[in-house]
Amino acid sequence: MYDTVNFWINGSDILGGKPFEVLPHLSEITERQNEKSGYSCTGKVLDYTVNVFESGISLKGSLCKSFFGDNLQTLTRRATLQAVEKLSDCLHTDISTAKVTRFDVSTVIPTKRQPADYYSYLGNKPYFERLQASTNTLYYNNHQRQIIFYDKTKETASKEIQIPAVWQNSNLFRYELRYNKRLNKQLKADVTASTLTDEGFYRGVIQNWHNEFKTIQKHKNNSFMIDDITNKSEAKNAVFAYLLQEKGQSFIDEFLNELKAQKKFNSRSDYTKLKTDLNKMLVAKNGNKNDLIQELETAIFDIAKYSR
Picture (cartoon, rainbow, N blue to C red):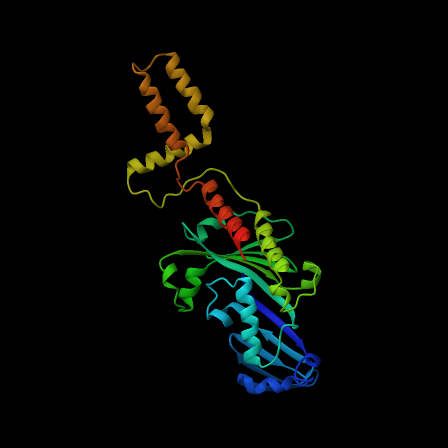
């Protein structure tokens, strides 16, 4: 469930206090001289940009991409342990005690409709600013955390990234919770690379990921979408179903009782058939907002419950 994870390694914790000893293990190295920070170098290892200073090493990148080669797959707790070991091996230094300065909890959720179809049903969230930057991306921002929903299929297409065969032609809804600042205060823990694989911590941040979604206000008014309507009959049925959903079950019961009282039909089975037909329309899946929100809520609940 981790994606971007940034680290800071104190110089005294590495290679006998010699951070620049990692340079032979980096690629694309550039050098800088600054009056304030002094001499420093920047290079690459796996998906990480590595900045080396006299005081220590900064690593910024995706732990998921460094391990899998992409961030479409989900980095489980076990895979996180392996990913930290892989990064340590490539850097030739143990990063298990490295301080985590930012990390994201995220995964891809296959959905029935395009992700953009769900955004208008996600309302305000306490202590966050809602911002829909484009048709494909929805943000919730505050000073320490950020939530982002976006269309992973379109993002990978724009970057010419190959989507695994299992998800070809799928709608991929990405939900990320980003811890950007003051991690220790937010999570009440000294967060290091080894902390990420602690079972209690891992389950806790995934539960936080679930709870953050729960506190977003949901718009659950009945509505319908017109994407699948192809003729006048389907259009009439969609409108009738929508109006029936607005009235509810009690309207159907009262209507049938009135028909029976006036003995409108000769056969009792006609009342039963009419009730069945009307009830089908009452629960018709015409893009009902309840259905779309329920789909997301169920998927996110299941992920939080079963992630290991």
